[in-house]
Length: 220
Image 1 (cartoon, rainbow, N blue to C red):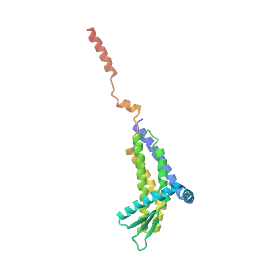
Image 2 (cartoon, one colour):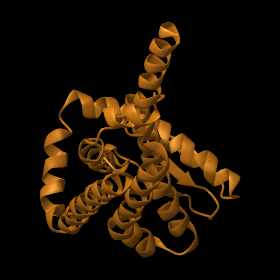
Image 3 (cartoon, helix red, strand yellow):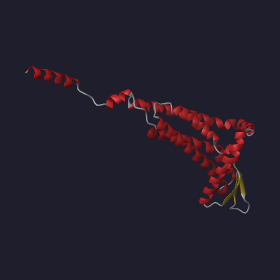
Image 4 (cartoon, rainbow, N blue to C red):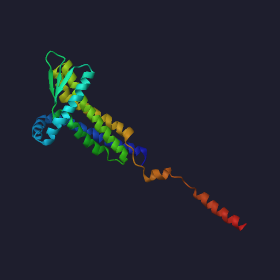
């Protein structure tokens, strides 16, 4: 399989990923009501309680540290983030549905599509790990940026970013991630043709000449 064929196949996979991601995020605004209903249903599950009790407060602590690094005074109480720079503290509640689990679902779908090629296990594992780490950082930014907007610009700007621009932010990350993965991370397995090309070749004519010369030498 030539490099051009490999690149063409990767390009088709990349296009499918972009199409799936685009359709997914285009549909999201139209299913906001259903998503809210689904959230209320799923909140009764024990897994949601685990996420709300441990993961959400952990993310809130990370955001608070970043805010303090940027010079924004903040304090935390469980899943509540308080911006204490104004004369009245601004309370921001981070629930389980705001920590970006949707982006991890999208990442899982793109991984199922993008890792179907003949790539090595090591490169696939590296791609999965970087995808998870990058998606986690993007979700942190999706919370940090509207928080900064709420502190500096206003509540409306923060809501617009949270509800609409945040999804575009995630989509851009997916595009950058898969472009980097195809260019630098994913390595295809060596094929039989590649092994034949790299194996040392022996000249059949040289072997035949050696046999003839040996026979002639013995006759003399």
